[in-house]
Length: 120
Image: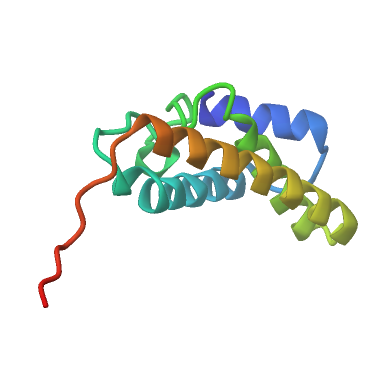
């Protein structure tokens, strides 16, 4: 899924008045968090990511079927910005479930980086 696809799908599901640059920023923040908290702790280099994007055709880090986490994230941010607290809570529950699934898959498929060794 690309940045453009994520935003277009989220806008179709949640019509809103939030400007596009704000949504791109939200995706960049999320992909930066995914890279820092999941990908960077494991061997291998992830391709793409909105945190490195210069255009809206850049692929996001999480591919299918995990790319739904981007839609849930955008919908949650839209709900929060528009004061829809109940919708925000529901969207965040969906996002957290999708995030946990992506993190579990990534950890199962990529060897963790070695950590510092302690000697006593």
